[in-house]
Image 1: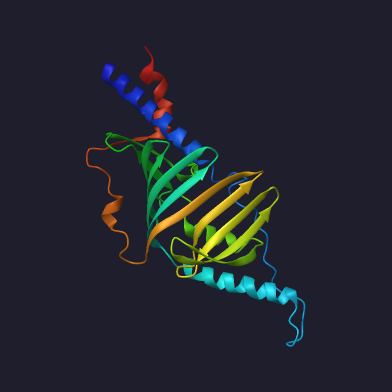
Image 2: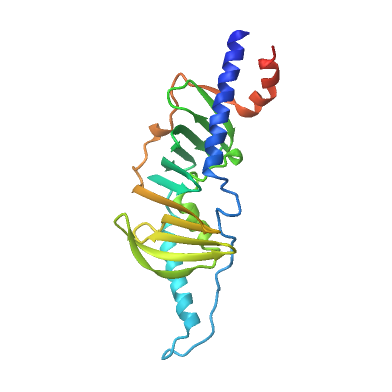
Length: 253
């Protein structure tokens, strides 16, 4: 009985740390993390070839950006590192993506957590390195932003109104820079010309800025080994929903 109590108390500590990390990363479904979708204009006023209208020029720019992003939409295997700074918090993570699986190794304010997603099953398993207990939950319960991939930004972008502001280099990569206004939030995104994915994001919400940078990209077949998604052999996995139901009786005196 004493062993059950100690195990239950340890699991509680895991939950507290996991929830702290998730809340620190922010809710990926919150209103401030993504701009509201706005359709891209499908047509522009007619103009003569000699004097192209401003609307036609803007439309051509948008189509060029969308064509660039079509390269990124084909990516289903890659590795990258993410640095996120904002709201008094900072986090660093390494991510591996292959098909329906994703692994994230995150450190936020000194706490390290590994999460492995299986999107085909709609579940993820999280654990702290060096510990022998892990927690399983539904993907929908994950509230961090570090599982938003560079491709996710591309998928959101083709439904939003944006303005092409120029081109810049980010971490040695040639990028097209776009801007999206959404209420009190202003978003800037840098799209890699080579890969067609977002490699940097700046969000300014009511004067509070958040910056995310994706670095050390490895893209395409062979960039991620299947072994990366394996769990430690001695890891004991607990279902969060089952544990929540059993927890009151397990820790009662």
